[in-house]
Length: 229
Image (tube, rainbow, N blue to C red; front, top):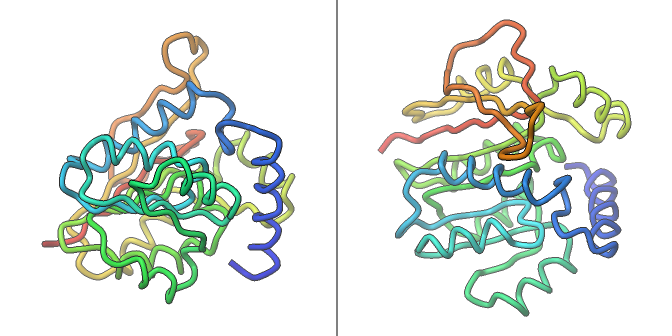
């Protein structure tokens, strides 16, 4: 993330945090709950794993991972006020202020078995970020990401609103990037689309695949990249 872009998003989310929004980057608790459930499912068994939650916001996912008996959880965000609040309330988790584009900072965090990037890659240089984090991943570990799909019409309106600061991905870009990483065992993605009837769950999810599907325009993309043992 360039310095002006980083400062811009930090200021934006400082305002969101100060306004008291309990989810920071979600419209409501139902969306947040299902999103975290999908991410945890994609991460596989958490018990005994060292987990990194980048863009942790108010720390809800980090706390869920700790509750699932991760050996250690590290939550990272650029909003210092949020991290300070988490440190005071939840000392069992390690909380840090920083950006995943800073390789030196990431190295201070150590190695991980599962790295979660939930609703944050579109705020950074995602290629550089994933390359850095791949080096912080233990053999057999997974990167789990959920991002807006740049091919979705609703997401395209958000892209226009933020004038180049909000840069989502699409499946073709993910496939191309995965091909540049060493030691990939497997990868896959799926879509999340808003349901017309949201009384039970806001999203319907598509099957996992690693093939390119023409016209794939789900609102959100979930993807997992697993490292060879």
